[in-house]
Amino acid sequence: MVQYAGTVLNASFAALSDATRRGVLEQLGRADASITDLAEKFHMTLTGIKKHVGVLERAGLVTTEKVGRVRTCKLGLRGLEEEAAWIERYRQRWAARFDELDKLVEELKQKEKADVRKNR
Amino acid sequence: MYERTDSEINPTKYGTTVERKSERELVVTRTFNGPAHIVFDAWTKPELLKPRWVPKSFGASFLSCEADVRTEGTYRFVFSHPSSEQPMAFFGRYLEVTPGSRLVWTNDEGDEDGSVTTVTFEERGGETLVVIHKLYPSKKALDDAMASGSISWSGEQFEQLDQLLAAP
Image (cartoon, rainbow over all chains, first blue to last red; front, top):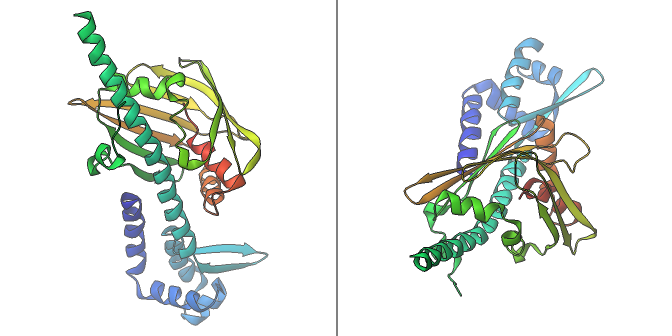
């Protein structure tokens, strides 16, 4: 969980180091927008804004979906939280199973000790 | 009868970690207080695991448990759970079994290619580090598994998640 969060945070911080990208996130926090909308808003070329959106997308901060000719961008934070929550629940399940396995390991250790004593 | 509370058995140094290592990989680690041959035995002997492997808090119970733990062998576990009318079966093949050190198996219960799980047992001064590495056939397969498990714990989601966990 902690390690996982660390990796994602690194990508997030890199993505957030740019003022335009922070602006894009702010904008998408108000409403979803197409690439064209964003390019107009930030006075950039389509290619330029696509690059920024790509960085945000790789960091999991934005998701995009193309419907027809329009690519719509929205905040991706929700997906990020869900994945982190899933990882944590998955971890808890394994942890519970491992607690059971601990008891079994302990029993087998005791048994092995007893067997060694018997065979002496 | 041996009895201790979990907090005594499982202090911080025996904590469980989970990391999504890449788009297709999940890695789980845990250290056990015992030599590798014992941890391996505890992991692989179905008759020993049957009452243990599913903690009571999950609400599931084992109906049957067959595992031929050797290279090229197969396994099949069947659970029941109150949230599902049908019993749930998990099955697959062992690609590699090296007693005391390494286990590799497939999960074949899905419609598409399943994940491949590699478990290594590494002994260090009487303790054993267990690393579970799950490799999914695609990014989508792991994303889907995560998406299905993120909604709730009942019915299908329970089943989906246990497909990830079901393992000899």
